[in-house]
Structure formats: C-alpha cells, structure tokens
Length: 250
Image (cartoon, rainbow, N blue to C red; front, side):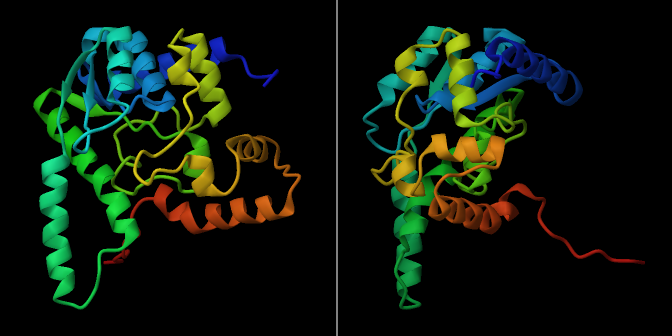
C-alpha cells in the first residue's frame, strides 16, 4: 500500500466521473444502491464530490427486514444526499413462489443459487426504474477484486452504466474511503453479500488481502489459494465480457 496515493487516485476517479457524465449523461443524476458497505459508500461519496450532492440519489432496497439498514442511512445522512427506500420483500416472495411452483411441475426444486441471486437482480430492476424516472445513470459498485473472481450476480450488482471502482482492489477502495473522510465503521465493515449469512472471505475461501496482493503483484504464497483464485477467474471472465453474438457476414 505504500505506493498507493489515495488522494491522487481519488481525485482521478472524481475527474473520470465528471468526464463520463459530460459525455454520457450531461446534467443527469447518479443513482446508487446503498447497502451500507464500503463499496456503495465510496461510490456515493465520489459521485457527490464529482457532481454535487444534489445530483446523487441513494436507494435502499431491503428484502423485508434488513438488520444493517441503519448503516445505509448513516451513509446517506453523512453525505446529505437525496434518497428513497423500496422494499423488495413482497416482490421477492411473490416471484419466488411462482418460480418454485412452476419448477415443481418439472419435478425440480429452487436451487440455492437461485435464492441467493434473485434479490440482487430485483434490486437492479429497482435501480433502473428509479433512474429512468429521475433522469439518472446507475452506478455499478463492484470493485476489481470482486470482478476478478466473479463475486457478483450477473444482471444484478454486476450491472450498471458506469463503474468507478472497477479498476481498484479492496485495500485501495478502503484507502480512498478513508481519504474521503467516510465513517470508519462503514469503510472497514466486514464484507458480506447480506444474502447467505457468510462473509465474502468465507464464501471465497481466501482473504481479500491475498487476492489483492495476487492481482497487483502476480504473487501468491499458497499454491492452493493461487489455484482457487485462478480457477474462479477463468470460470467467471464471461461476466465481464459483452454477450457473445453470431457475426453475420452479408
């Protein structure tokens, strides 16, 4: 981390956001799903600095009762940005029940991955509904570490119109969060998807520190960890690429 200049990179990202909006949404608002974790907090703060807080809309989207919703509101109040809350709980229950019923006619059960991935996809639908009604552009809040190993839901949190953190690993995002003066309890909050009851690192099978170091240096002390990271990276590269399409040569 000694060679990472958080202030310099923060300023560069802020300028990048301004340039992106000038070219792709001049005068538009940034719409951000606020989870209360470091990534959405840092993205919201960067957008507020780049565009002004009046052009940033934070959206909370609890699935029924969300235990850490207070963290989301803490960030929203800290930045003084506009916000709204859309509870996806009833929609999730209705859709899941319909899917479960129809899978039953095929003698199949709802998979665990279906249960985990449906809420992020409903949240992205919600963000685009808000965005299209508020002259907005939806922020992707994934960081490079998550993208590297595919730790995101395609068409869920992996979607968006612009990605301020897509080139930054976890430890760099944390450093920028501190540089922005965000509440330390949000910046250093233990990463969790809030879906399965486990931390990110429990799910991945390795630490973000090991992953960040490998991404930036190509070095990994543990061969098993290296193999696991390489395997996840190879299997999930498709998430970062455009949808393959048939090329018709007329």
